[in-house]
Amino acid sequence: MEEAKHFIGNQWVVAASHDTIPVIDPSDGQVFAQLGRGNAVDIDRAVQAACRAYEGPWGQASAADHGSVLCCTVFR
Image (cartoon, rainbow, N blue to C red; front, top):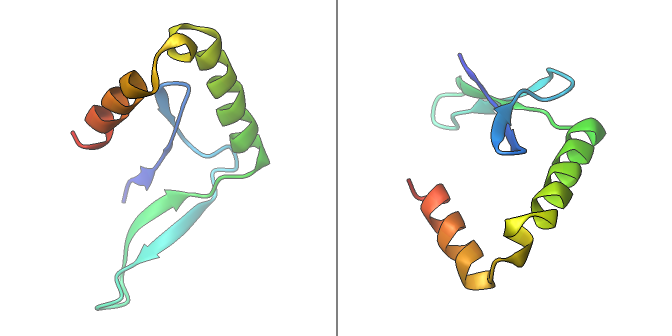
């Protein structure tokens, strides 16, 4: 079973701790996925990546531009 990763710095990364959280199907009690269990290290990595992004073109883009990029990314 593949572990769901965090999207940090424009790439999918495994949680720093390598710990996971089981996702359980309530209809049968079976684990059907594993999520990465984030911690303070993952939060720091995400905040640093966000700060770097805002120092570049993303920080100069309009809210409408942000929305169009995020909408297209989420609903692929």
